[in-house]
Image (cartoon, rainbow, N blue to C red; front, side, top):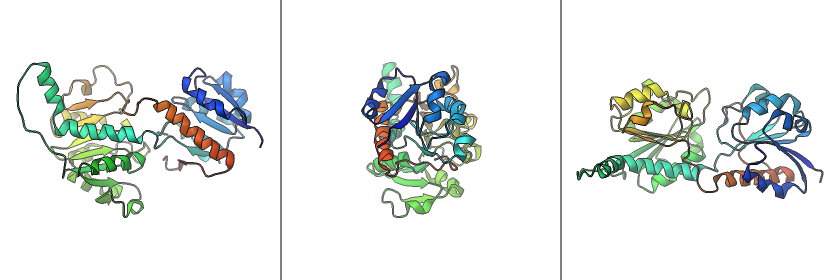
Length: 322
């Protein structure tokens, strides 16, 4: 079997890249995060593995990558990677979708319970040495709406169903979830207002595309129950943040649990920092022990499939963006 040329767009000192060593017997590997480090290798590269924040470098070297047949993104989100040259090329694109689903779905469950049991109030009272009994909610029988029923959305549904919650799911092709035992009802994007009006908790797990940008905008937020909680584990710009801030400030909805934001890091002085009805995670809900190792291991497994001519996992529709 001939040697495969793999180009990794990452800092060569990244510890997790040691996991690629097992490929070196049959693979020529070049690693770099600067144009002059990888430009020459780009000409012969057949596979490109992009680390976080390497989208711009891939754009710069793309005209030289005439031999590339597969590009893998360590991240599940692809909005920064879908430039014209890659989209229109014959190269297959895969991503890290699914690697992070378990931890993100656990964050969703934690967020649901945080608001149902008013843990924020408990913590504030404990800090102030205040003894103030109050009523809490149960989640059994409550409705959880999932916008974006992919790997993350399905993982959320499994865990929420174990809490006896009712599950509503929104996806581009509702027929693909026909018969799914985890879902009580499936909605098309055109019916999103029905899902929003009926949900006690709304989970955003959709990728960022032109169709999903500001998907939760002023009209959608106005459709929410006053007791609703918004939970975003997808991409920040899926929510139109000014409308969400206004709704939270005026208590038009109960709260929000956010792991992703329009601008990251979230700027100092942003209203989300001061609002007591916001649970804020600095885009680390999937940063479990060994999470980057797991992401590299997934690529290695996919690479072995590539070498054997077996269909790759997580192939992305480059036109749709997921």
